[in-house]
Length: 85
Length: 185
Image (tube, rainbow over all chains, first blue to last red; front, side, top):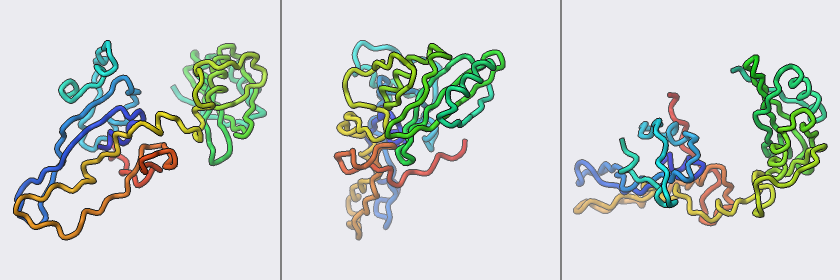
């Protein structure tokens, strides 16, 4: 979520939900965030790299390949299926 | 390439840049300005490169924000003309001696968009993707588990970085408590 908040172009959006893990009957059940959707709008991205720097899990990184051109603006919004390596 | 950061008085702007250009730093990389409303000033910045010596000069001069005026550099560096036109339309800086300060990039819209006090309509209206943080919502109680004794305490909601709270319509903003800097990597 830090990447979403710190992006100056607001080009990242994600949805997630929380799930209880471990013993559900415990007095203080542990929860984890589970990612549902992660999307970068390459038409807004400034390639500044703040998202890469700020991620505490090193989940984002630079690749040398350029972003593929698209005929429509919505086709520049890539989800995790196109982003994940 | 090493960079020399030099702050000069606004009256010395033209003379100082003339010395640098005569000394070999004759390539203008960019000329722009930065708004500093807290100090009541606008800082004009020029980046000159001495290609032969592989050195860079970052020259800064502060002018009054209420009527920012500074000498134009077009007689030393003709390429500065478009940089000065852009700085003029984006921040309202007047470049004395530049005969052509027509707008370069904007066609209508808010005047002086790069001043920090100019609200940008897109920032006001666009929903900020960072507002919906799943950590702000408590997880559903597991089946059979007792209901939590105290309601989850909502965190103070930070807003988009750099956007003043009074611009936002959804109550967020103001650069509230921010996550700490990422660990030195």
